[in-house]
Image (cartoon, rainbow, N blue to C red):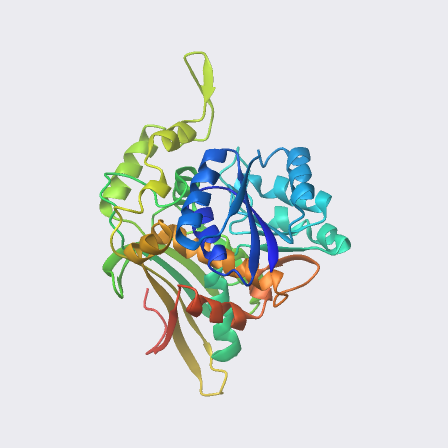
Length: 403
């Protein structure tokens, strides 16, 4: 059994800590820290009520590297699981290096002052982690995370090469709010309003945000409009699948969400440029995030399913010509809430964070340096998806996608 320190106290962290407590033979000693200790205490209380497991809680500012280093040295965990904001990835990695502890996160680094997310900042840490004999695993959520594992499972078991790849992320849940985001509002809106990028013929092609819309009929959800966006796993997939000709990421949004977001963008509320208000400097997007419903409060009212998967086309492993496969997970908001007190968007990220942590502390995934999910054996991760709440299916399609 391993000692774990989880940083962050939002919905994803709540799910991950609950699921760790449900795997007592792997995670024997769980510690939870965030800037707001009462949030940690609330998660710890729920975990105790649901599983009987005690979770130790702490108050820490993850951007204060010396203080965080001291906390890590005090606890001496086998692994630090970063479920805080992407802005805090680099400070937490610095603290892990200083304390001599391995690291895992679910989303790549984003600077606070620029709506841009890329892996190069974290990939630059590879030699430092390697020299320290430590492992850093990046992007162990669903997308990124499971979508990359899905892709590499297909390449291991079905396709010799992957020529074309589409990642489809559908949230068919209804939370009853006029406008709310299903994960951190600031991160969500920065992603959605950023220019779209997709991989094609050896380079990224940039197009205006939300400019490319396609309707797709999702199992257990129905027809939904999905929009092409940029997502970080496209960068790592393009790196680790060199034969890839085209890769795209799609996410569904309802008409009401698009209408509200358009108005907010038009009046400047999605901006990250500072403005002066009553003698104080504020960031409009941060103020907007403060007044929107908190994602972790949406679990009880959210009904419906998520459907997230990968459609890949390439040369069949058995030499039978070109094949197309669709591998996906369908998750119920109601079932996720019943099990952990959180809606399915948090659940589909928190469970893979737990599984990635399990892969590392059990030694099923190992190495010195900084790694992406695509570099690991997909099989043990896929087995835990089936056993721990995110079962998947795979089917052969008639041919490549027509969009």
